[in-house]
Length: 323
Image (cartoon, rainbow, N blue to C red; front, side, top):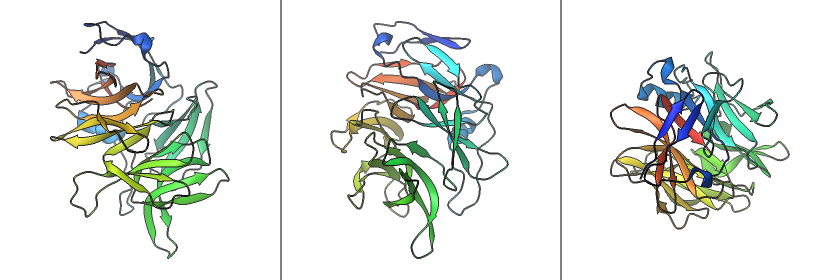
């Protein structure tokens, strides 16, 4: 069962439809996402999806810049239905991660003149932006509360002098250390304990059709495989990991315990669900999906307990939600 949402300038209103999800039960933590308003002209889905990828470099080291998009970095608070833009966020800014306390948003900006991705932290209480000294080539990143403060994807030197791309950690003391076994890794996320990292590794020369997820904890040595999937993210209480997995030709959202056990299918539509993110309490999952004839990417929420779904946005292109 779905509940429709009606759009008004700067706000959306939840309309009850056959019961649906009582909006008051949904956590009030804001969801950050990328928004392209319909009033600014129709943006093709393929162009929009390409713009959501923040890969600054190809494997050969050549720069790759996403198309310049007339998008805004926005926040939606589900119980109230309010949508507002993040102040002073430039075009092309993408949300990467919330801090464990939910007050600081990690933002990636790719300068269209070239160069690596620039990382900024925006404090939603004070409105202040702090620029981080990002590792060269960082394409995705996550915030931690320590001892791991930042996990990103970057090129770094191996002991034998060769360069490789993988997961690079910034520690409490400011040291930057390659994650053991994290070579070739992408899309890292840090658990609230500040010691555990989940990431995906593309198959490379393997016959697998999609990446494999890996879990690594400081002091445990090599990471441990926890199954196939991509775009893994911890819940803020550290109990759950949400991810996508291809099935029957399209990507569905799955949820599992933080140790990789008890995998559970959350969505089973005939469409691709992308960039899933789980609520603080693990009871809801938000994601983007393009459905119907309009070829527009919209945001949806599903309640884990019964897979009840509501649609959050109605018009334009909307994607890359971070809860």
